[in-house]
Amino acid sequence: MEKDMYTIIACGVFQKEIEKLREELGFPFRARYLASGLHVDFDELKAALESELDRADGQGTIVVYGQCHPRIEKILEGRHAALLDCQNCVDALITRKGMEDKARQGLFFYLSPGWLDAWRDIFSRLGWTPAEARLQMGSFRGVVYIDTLQDAPEREQELLEFFDYTNLPFEVMPVSLDHFKSLIINAKERLEE
Image 1: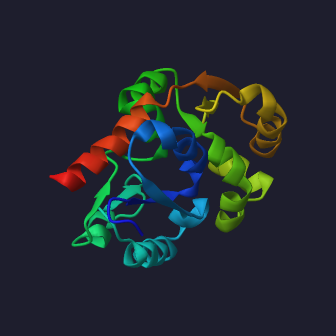
Image 2: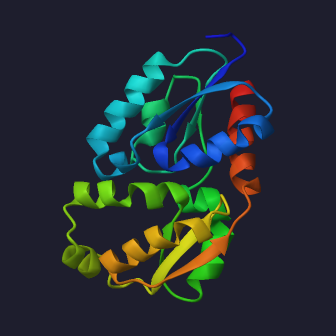
């Protein structure tokens, strides 16, 4: 790997957004995307992160995750790695304030493009049949599709399939990638301190 190259280790839910931002980020990086459902098993997530961190080299590693493991800072300790400054993938895409503003209308489940791609695998890992999903998600008022890629019209059928599975109505929230981009750049800058 080139010495001035960075490594990005990211949850697979962010793959499309990171690739869309590749040129805009303004620094060279090699991206490694981990399976989106790893957060449902802390041991699997820890093993996958440690494996990728062991392979990382170059200028440093940007870890594009939120607080998805209770000891994520400990996993990164001593590895010249910087974690995004966010709680979770929703916070990374719409900001904590955006989440709080929406919460005034009730409790919502958020789907990003990556989550829409991965939900079947994640629900399978959790053992959720449609009946179980409806039971587990019964307190949600609905689903918010975080339209980071402006692809909601093309994904309407997939959103309807999620509705059929969960019985939760959906709405679309157009979102800019500016906040997400700033989190990645901030993590890179922390590596340079």
